[in-house]
Image (tube, rainbow, N blue to C red; front, side):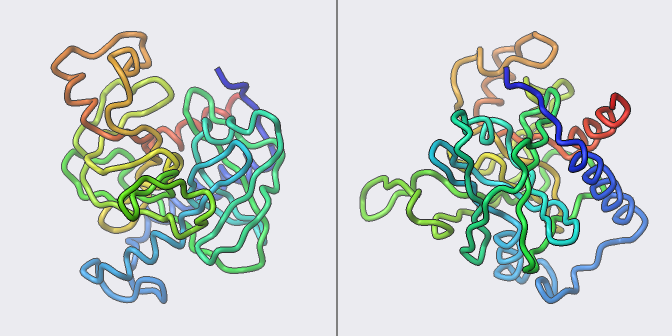
Length: 272
């Protein structure tokens, strides 16, 4: 079980930023007219471009994962990723964040926010450049069969007839995939995984965004399909799914929903 640590200044800033973004989205219907997304969702190249610009790559000696930019405070950007990606830095050597423009930034907070009972962490980097921030969905728990996009940086790609490591490829390893929600669990898996997706995700994409057809953030990916036997699908209440449900579950990639993220932040604020 990873040790839970909190960087309180970052933590409280994120509560304000994330709740403020969600409230603003609830009151104001989001507009898709912007320099990054000038028309509608039929402009697929524009939508894919926006997704790539909010998705980052995490790379270090023992770290390889993805993340999504969720907030900004002056020149400090906040990135949501998976705790198991951050905790892979066991020697505390540090790691870098690669942005879509192929710029490498050192992680600026040495004590990341690690969420309680969720496989999530928040890290940050400093930059005076402009990067898009993911918009939170106004519907915190999506329904089955809605269109989804997942994005990130796989550790391996199939190229020229063989599998190749992508560590030296930087942002060229970027992968985006379209699918749909297939399962919404009433009781999540351990560490908060509750959204089952048809999207294909691969190792190295953990921490990447799940977006709906409005390009709003609805979750964070962290588990691939066919992760293991039934023991890998233990629910948060200690029980296991039926055999029929398990067969459906192993055929899905898994994500943590925005609902759980915001709920966790509020609970941590109340406990602090």
